[in-house]
Length: 619
Image (tube, rainbow, N blue to C red; front, side, top):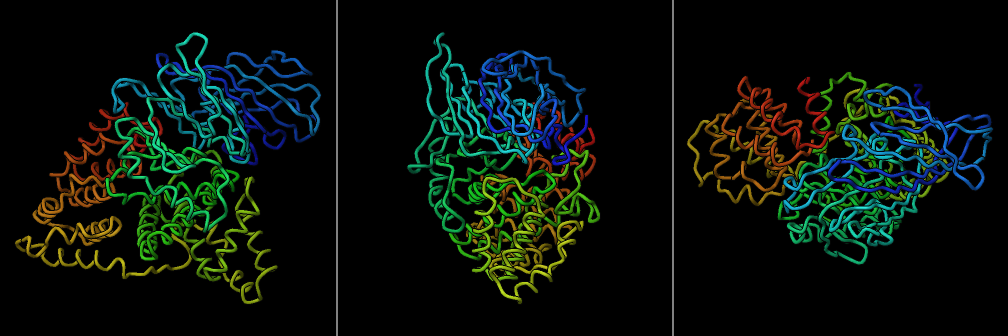
């Protein structure tokens, strides 16, 4: 089956047809671990002589297909292509004499299957309450096609509505505004109705069903979680409204109505997912000190970059994540000061270097705009679009002046809101803006940028970056003192614990990274470090992860139990994948334990995480 020229990761005939609206009518069956029902898909024909509309599907059991002719729906014979291991199957629904501008409505009856990656069903034992099952979806990048038949490309933006039947007493939430709920005729189910009027790409359709409680943060913000953690979640994320207001001051007014936050079970594979109206986040953010809420600033920023202005395909993913990471750090700077932004930039630059080294500096997947023809977008997923992309925006801010760039950023959002764009659209906008509003000196600055190297060049950015070292100094100086005394007797007088506890989370991570960079650390030093700072038992996952990576790099087997514990407690890929790789590389014993741990934990991980870790192991 031929892929689209607009999006090489989709089979949909995007050049010929487009979807405008989808209505989902689904029933949740926890016993069968599936959703069943129908998708009513409305759209338009874009060219003359189009004989079919083609949808993406993956591991969907298609029962029947109807197309609307006049005022009636008529059952038609559809065709499903042979499945591709990554991209699934094309579902072709025939037209009769379709012309450009014609509207279509197609109803597809189907059932999801366990083989699909969009939905994770959790048993009661996998939840905090231990009494009720739970499910949540993750459709980014190309998994919406295993939730419902769709033109699964970010180039297509749809409105959607839904009626979801769930067994009592569970609650359903979606990336949409809840409009009503009612008891089913049988009395065994509750029907929840939703509507998302703002158009979104298919990967932002999201559903969660579980025993959920809520706490109000403000008139437009609330937090949701299992009842057992709702108070902790409400405290941790109490500043959501303030963060949202700050984002509005920096960008443009918020357009989505509500901004709610859902804290998911530990198997959620990402830090956060920017589902409109209902951001999904990992419970690893619950540090009990609000120190890891930068992720919330990132997800809030997605309400503009990614959700309003969307990359037209996964090759231009940096337009989503690069801009969002830039906006996130601007929000953090406004809330916590420029030092916090500079620390984040320094840590981001390090993560970029790590991923470039992991892929190889000449790998085409380290380009800002990679060629993904025939490549699973998840296999290209890294910090590169986030960090390399945000560094380009940061570089342009410094090149033109922060005040000027602030105006450019707002104009960029206003220009493209509601659209899906490519890198060329961004460049053309910037060029026209400079020519129209700025002077010849600004034009020369724009001409000085090596755009080919930024967009197409592999490896690190084509310019050097140096961030303010002052906020890093307290962390690097402490690491230098530890290193200078690494062969000495350690004492609390020399290294009082409060020196470490007083550091910001970012500074603690810089301290541990600095020690990791210095070379082989004596195990006696590592043991003392752990004892006085409580690193293996830290409730801050960023600190705990950075410590374990330092210890594993030095073949310090005393942390094996702590590493296994962290791998067993959560499935966030930011932690799981590097920890498995580091433990496997720490020696024969570590490699054996890493494989054993993965075999034990695999079934509890989200399918995306399980597949990616298996790939790391070559399984």
